[in-house]
Image 1 (cartoon, rainbow, N blue to C red):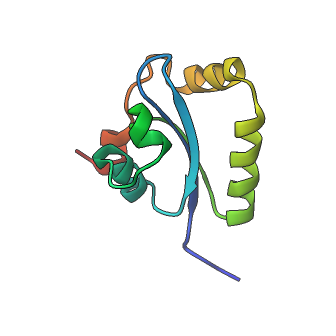
Image 2: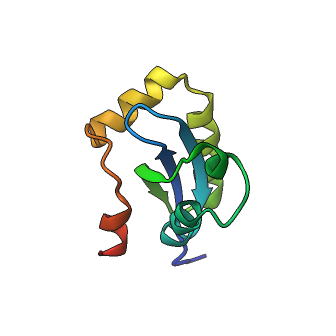
Image 3: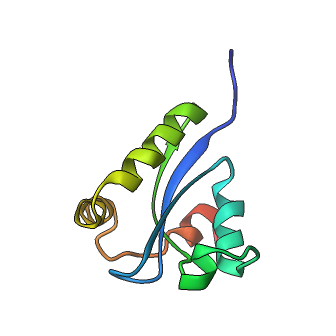
Length: 100
């Protein structure tokens, strides 16, 4: 079965070294926009977590969900190392995925 769907596991932060949030979505631009505009009450709104600092893409939703759960189990130090390998300055990647 062929599909053009993709799924993204992403990590948001409140700032450098700040609070982290891990999620999965089938539309990264829309989902991060929702976090940034605080349209939904919840953890990210309460803690000001709206900077996209890391993401991985998958073609298979089950693989994406497995990765999300695995990342959530890792300790904070491991997550920080993962982030800093790809994004050492914790730059907000949202502009790079939107083209703005």
